[in-house]
Image 1 (cartoon, rainbow, N blue to C red):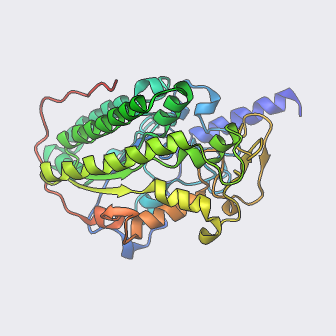
Image 2 (image 1 turned 120 degrees about the vertical axis):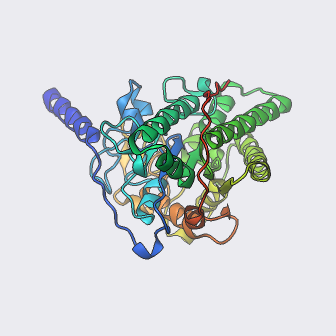
Length: 380
């Protein structure tokens, strides 16, 4: 292909990715919450709907190139999958448009905002080039203030207290730690986990202090069993990288206990822990139970498990992504995200507890008085 044509295609894809995504709502009105509920979204690439399109990053921190977005949008949107994310499916379930990225020009805040940034972690050093968790919190503060100016104090407080605050963060921190400290002692690993849990808890408390009352917290997934890790470690059969798995299991257990403790201390605090770790690991181990033909290899990539490059360099692309659990070496396909969203929305067991997402969105909260003095914490 001529160089000029390659350049044209690249520019075209980036132009399409910058366009506002159509406000598509395929809702089942019988399933919608009883009242309007906004959704504010924080975290990493599991939730990022395109914020990284608007900042100067290396290509590996973006998903604004083909074949990302091929299944549903038919062009790359900045989502690290072939189509929609968990939060997109949840927006549809509550009868609202997809929650727009914070950095997308001209957005309306009344349905919520997506602050997530692919690569983000609890600690800034994890990936300092992206929108860190502390920066996301600062951006939320700006939105809250702007909302109060636009719709008035009373309505803003009502919107913020009724909203659901969804968070997915931590996986990148554990990747950073395991990759950079391969000889860490058990004491150092445990100390890192404790610091992670403490900072996640502080983040939730800061949101609470600014009006949040309902939290949906996606726990950290089974990093050590995902195709990208298994390929980099050259693991055969059912083998998984165990160090990060053990750290993440401790993190998830301790986070659940810490969040439960907050419920007993903070008036009106409600939450759902979404057990991403357990359900994704079960999908990896038993793909046929969920309708997948493949969970070891990703749909798009290169190498032993087709888990590298992801469209940046030489790669192969599967014909039917819905047959695969993973689209690239780290991220599920749209079909995988659809199943996860359905389970988190309807589940009656421990996959989403103590409330499933449908119940959490239906809960009514009492508007509170926002703190006049509010400082965004610095995570370190």
